[in-house]
Every structure is written in structure tokens, then in C-alpha cells.
Length: 307
Image 1 (cartoon, rainbow, N blue to C red):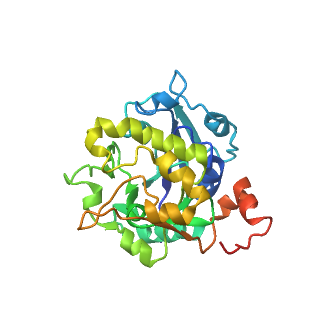
Image 2: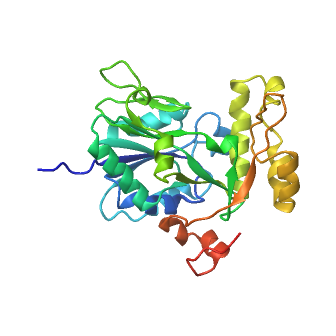
Image 3: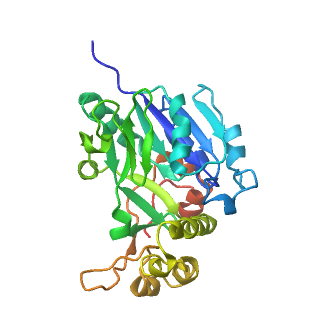
């Protein structure tokens, strides 16, 4: 008798994530074994939060009113010391074979999720999945390109009783018996998924308020790890004023002068590496096509127009 495909428990941490939240849930609902969402601010997001640590936008309203005919969704709410604590809050509630960490701005093509599920089914020694992303920048018709945007993400780990996240950057889980992290063990690499044409669709640099809050968050947490007087050589604290807003008025000039990354990378000669955007060629995941911004960008047709 053949084994069934693995069951995926999606764990989401979210704060002020209304922008694409409904579409993200739409995209995984049928595929998911269960979805546990943990809402609220960590310590660095508290300046952006309500006094109780909750989101100031419609995040909680969307979650509470999201249709759940199969009873797959659980909601948790609180204030969190950090993203590790917030992620570990959903772990005791998961009962699937794998945990799939999901942000409120990440989507996937259905056929890509099925391909990953089949690969994990076929090799029971696989412990984790690493992947890269397509980052949409300034809208839905351009994607970011360059060093900063080729980072890899660990999104899927085999689920064991008592499993806990041990870090958020990078996301990792300790194997219960081997003394090794799951990322160190046999896994599907980002290079392998690239060969299959699989990447996460990341809508993380699309809307003004979304990006402004993201940069404010980084401006709060980065000085706790790096002295700001040195960090200004590695991070654009004035990203919104210097790059994001001017980019919308003069894309070519900003990309030539600064690039588009909030982080500052340098080549062997110490010169800044300037990332850029490219026209998006392809199709957005089906769930994204219900978003008002999709209809605003492409009209009523599902056919993509040239950028």
C-alpha cells in the first residue's frame, strides 16, 4: 500500500500584515493540513503596535472573518520577545508531518507546492527545504534583481514532537536525536528548487505603507545588534527618503546611483554593488489574481501585459 503525501502544517507569524493576508491564506488553504496563525508585535515592533501589542491595521479582523469551512485555522494572539518566541508559540498546536513557515506576504504556485510534497514523500530522509524568492518591487510588474534579493530561506522542516525553532535568521530547528540542526541534514536545496523552476513569490516591497513599516522595524532592531555609527555603512537608514520614494519618480536614476537594496554590499574594491529591477515575466499565483492591485495592474484579463 503506497504512503500518502505528507501533511503540511502552516505556521504564520503576522503583525500589521493586512496587505496580502487574505490571498496568502487562499493560496494554501486547500493544500494545508492545518494553519496556525500567531498575531502580535515583538519587542522591536512595539512602536508600530497598539498598547497591547496588537496590529494597528485590519490584520486581526481579516483573520477572524476568514472563512474556514474545514476547521483548519487556529488563531493565537499576544506580545512576543522576538520572532523565535512568536514562531514557537504555534509549534505545540501542529499535528502534520512538516511545518511550513509562512509569512503574510508569501505565495506559491499550486503545482510548486505539489512538486515539493512529492519530493518529500519520495525521500523520507529529507529534513528540510531551502528556497529562494521572487521579490516584487514597487508594484506587481517588476521584480528585484541582484545580490540582496538572492538570499535563501528555510521554510519547511520535518515535524517531530517537541520540535522548536532555535533561530529566525536563518530559520532552523534542532533534530530531536541526532544533535544536529535539520538544516545541516539532508534537505532540498535552493539550487535544486531553482532547477525545478520553483521560487517563493514574495510581495514584500510592493506598497508604500508596507515598505515604510518594514524599514522602520529594521531601524529599531539593527542598532541592537550593530553599532549604528558603523552600520550606516551597511544599511540605508534613510532608505525611504533616498531610494524608495524617488525610485517611483525616476527608476533608472535611482538604480544607477544607489541600487534598490536597503542593505549596502560592496565588491572587492569596496565599491557599492547596485541592485536593480527587471520586468516580471510569468504569471502570478492564482490567489494573487483576486487582489485589487492585480486587477488595477493588469485589468480584468488574466493575460499579463508587457512591463
